[in-house]
Image (tube, rainbow, N blue to C red; front, side):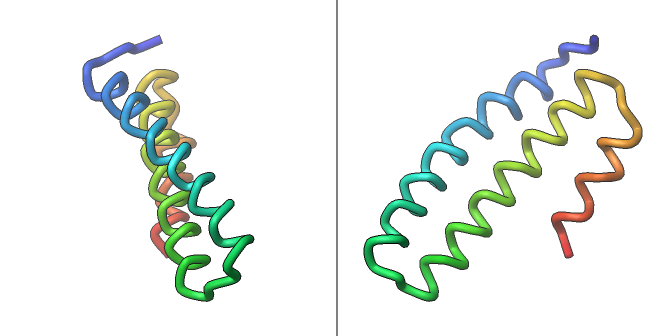
Length: 73
């Protein structure tokens, strides 16, 4: 396990993104706003990207490092 400063900061940074994306999702189900749905999805994907990036550094996994680039497209 490779606990570097970058991996720790990315794990800490992904937590508020996941929390706020679930709050946005709750608001989306109330209002059914089309734009808010896409913003929620983008916010969740960015949090998932940070989380996978941190896990690829911690686990020293080349597969996770390459897998995270699927969220860019």
